[in-house]
Image (cartoon, rainbow, N blue to C red; front, side, top):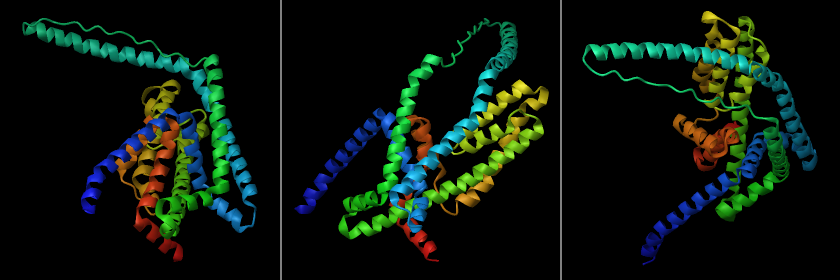
Length: 352
């Protein structure tokens, strides 16, 4: 009798969980201005957790440690923004020239298509059919953001930065208490130690993943800087830094760099040299993606490529750029929390 009641309640329980999940996702999407920076803060806090442990071993108080790491993180973000500023202004200055080059390319392609249409019409007349004329219309170019748009977005960005900083600081300050409370809530007193170990394993895996990817991205940016210096493209170190940063966002980041280098080649070079920056980065990116990253990252984290792509697309659709950044670390954390073999393997490696 009890088994019947339990089996009868299973569909109802599953439906309740599904409805709760859908409602939670809708709420997170609706509140993305708050939820996205908070999630990013937790992910960054998990990444720098080993640094907090180091400060703890040095007997530095937790409050001071969290404050030092917060200041270091905000300073690093500020330096990156200042370093990328020349690229932003250079792109703004080159937009009219880029638009002219693109219009010339579109006119050439349109002339080629019209030539094919004329040939098709002649063939149709020769076969006794009626020729149809295709008319093409030009789309209006999207205007650049105005000063008023920037002033309107400034309070939102400042608010997100404050939400990120506050969540980041208090997560670093109380992360162990948070892990303990969640462990007792999920598994009770009996399983709390195991679940806390999984949280620590997730921290280790995410930190290793981030450090390894950071070294790989730094090498990619350095190599791209050297290639662009040999080609004579302006601001090669800025392009290298952009490649270093955008490579954290899988698929989308490299695509943006390739598109930017193709446009930059159209502006600064002629003939076959137009595609040289694009092909140079494409070669470097293929070597990094096919050989370097699998050999280094695969030692610490092994994720299904389809799941990574789906998580990235969902994250970009759900929260925009922040979603693309946090999607992969969240997947690594979820894998560490759900996979018992990951916990045993990590504990065994630490024991050795």
